[in-house]
Structures are given as structure tokens and as C-alpha cells.
Length: 190
Image 1 (cartoon, one colour):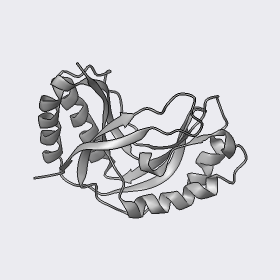
Image 2 (cartoon, helix red, strand yellow):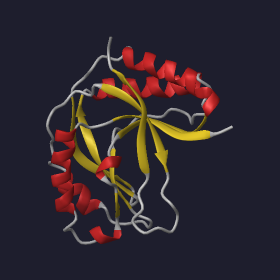
Image 3 (tube, helix red, strand yellow):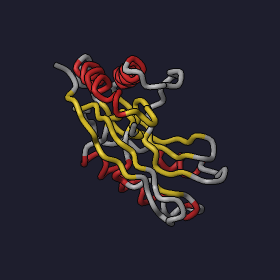
Image 4 (cartoon, helix red, strand yellow):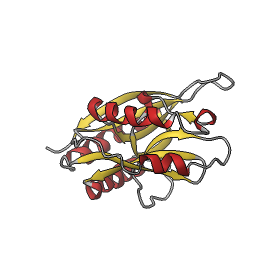
């Protein structure tokens, strides 16, 4: 039986990613930037639910349930805004706008996976974030998060809930990044 490493996500559109790319480029000039592993632009997404390794046999039911979750959720306003950090390990860009609806969609994606038989961790409070960089050691990410504090991107409406496959990088290859591929996407709303 084969598995796929999957997650449900909302992907930012090109204009929003373009703006963020400009802000991130400026971060590369800060002291310590060279020690961070920067996420490639192709990997920028708001993870709604991390499903982990999903058995192929669960996919048909999972796809049906995620489609239902997408159609039950109306489009909502969103923008990339500000930044933060998870301890000294991850730097991220935040979100603003219809966060209640984004959290609702995250809960629905999590429930869809669980009901389809995917072993899910307990659902906890959802913090919308788009990971920009990671550190192998506990780094001082405070200056990077502070530099993003006033960032406010263009307003957009997520149009889709995406199921994304993640292929991990090859160990030992410097600069290797995970590869992401949208398996299926469903329009939000009816």
C-alpha cells in the first residue's frame, strides 16, 4: 500500500506573493540571514491541516469530504500581514482579514481528514502563518519578525481549498527544498 504526504492549504495568488517576495528580499540583508534556510516562493502557503502520510485507499473519501468542506465555506477577504516566529526555529508571515472564516475552513479540513480515516493529531487553535525561513538551531529571529511587523499586502479572496502533496528534500543535498504539487483544488462556496 502506498502513501502520500499531504496537507490542506490556501495558496496566495501571484500579486500577493510578489509583494511578500519584495519584503523577504530585504530580510536577506539582516545579520544572521545566511544561517537560515529560506523557504522557496513555490512553497509559500497557509497550511490548514497537515495530514501526514495518507494511504491511497483513503483518498477517494478524503477528496469527497474536502470538496464538501470547500463548498460549505464562502470566499472571504485575506491579506498577508505582519510576521512572527515560533521560538527560534521558524520565521513566518501572518494573515489579516477573514481570519474567523480561515479558521473555520481549517477546522473543516481537519474534520474531513479525520472522518476519512486519516490519523490526525488533536485539533488545536489555528494560527494562520506562511513559513518564510527555518533554523536548525535556536536562532534570534526577533529582528526578522520586527522587520515584517508593518508589512501589509494587497487584499485578495482565497478562491480554493487545495490538497497538496509534499515530497521531502533529499538528505545531504545543500539547498534542497521540499517540492509541492497540488493534487486537487476545490472552489470555495457554492
